[in-house]
Image (tube, rainbow, N blue to C red; front, side, top):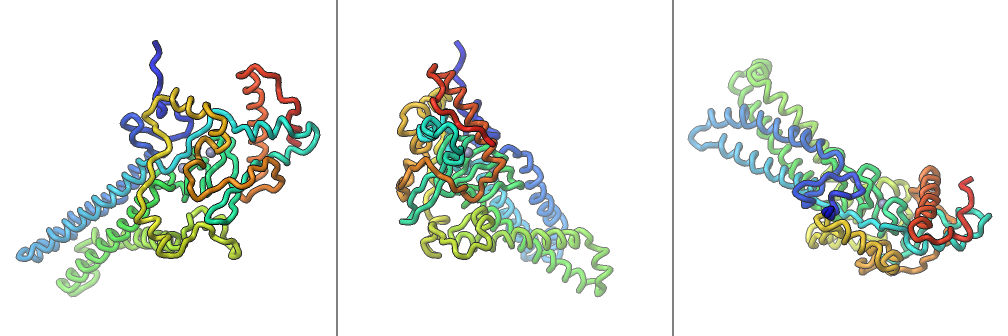
Amino acid sequence: MAEIPRLYQVWKGNNKFLLNGRLVFGPDAKALIVTVMLIVLPVGVFCAFVAREFQHHSQECNAGYVIMSVAIILTVSVLVFLFLTASRDPGIVPRNSHPPDEILNCYSSAPAVSSNEKCVPHTKEVRVNGLAVRVKYCDTCMVFRPPRCTHCKICDNCVERFDHHCPWLGQCIGKRNYRCFFLFVSSAAVLCGFVLSMTALHIKFVVDEHGNQWRAIKESPASLALMADCFVSLWFVGGLTVFHLYLISQNKTTYENVRNRGDNKRINVYSLGCMSNCNEVFCTRVEAPRINFQGYAADEAASAAAPNSNNKAGGGCMKNEAIMEENHPSRVRVKVEDDVDIGDVLLKLSRRRNYSQDIHGIFGTPPPHKSPPPES
Ligand SMILES: [Zn+2]
Ligand SMILES: [Zn+2]
């Protein structure tokens, strides 16, 4: 008898899994090797040349060992946060095995000749903190995305509170790993600052000792290279830390910040004030993942296919959103929402057309009375 596969073995996204689905990496997890090298190599050089020199010059107080220990502790914390960010499900939304009824009804009731635009793209309005927010239907995952959820084209998943896809970690940054990501970036900035300042101090000692800058540079080329490396890195990770502190205080994601740039009139419905926004990121418990990748694929398929009400709410995605209320699940939307471009719309149309053929094959029912009009 064939063994029922686990969900991580048949998952349609581009993720890589380890330990039987316990660790969820992004598709380009190899980028982690480069990132780890970029962290570990400079620290290795620092310990071998700079910290050892400190120890050589101040053997009584063991300053070199203290400096080395601090550098190693900081490096380990950076690597731990990096691992936690890269190996955690960022907030992947469960997929549906077939589209919600609203989407199907849209086609079955749409006039045969009239514009397909009445159904595409399909959106609905929900209320967040008392204000209306329009959410969109994802054709790939076949769910209505919860607010702030975006489909990452690299991972091929809908991710809740999508911030960005990080190329250095090869993973999406979303609702469940954003805090670890911020701690990774900020601890990396602290490490860079520490190594830079200690290396600068070391170069000062060497200059004082030799009384000549060029002689000192000749004596310790590693220190100079380290200073240059840390200076550049500090600008990058330090700038990123300040940028994310701003985003956290405003309760924005990087994606929202880029998308809404220049639109100063747009109200941020998610902001609850600076303190509450910081509290939300740093002090609230990380929610459990919505998908059990270790579970059997058959169970997941059954839960996705079972009740129609589940489909209506987007594969259960919206059920747990306490602050959201479905307002008008109107299937007729003419306006195209912000980040949907024409290419996507045409792709979705063709996929829907394929689906209507598939569903006919599965259920043995005649095709919808009024099929979607042509894409043109
Ligand atoms: Zn999606
Ligand atoms: Zn991604």
